[in-house]
Length: 76
Image (cartoon, rainbow, N blue to C red):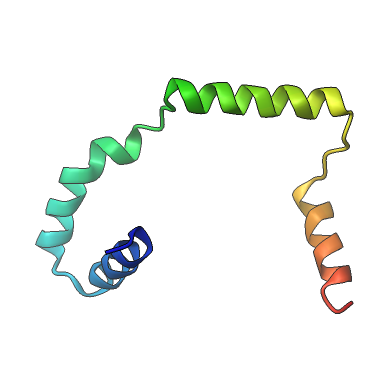
């Protein structure tokens, strides 16, 4: 089973599961959900991307500017 299918099935199950089963699942997964650490390889990749972005001089966009651009260009 592919990861996308697993996620889909879990989402569906969560909507209909009994409260005690949801609580048990939460207890099993609680540590992982609160643990947002990245492995060394991911940190290096993010740092490289950040450095490349800074060196490129590219302009960043706010979320509002991004939404405005999308809204204005969706019908084109």
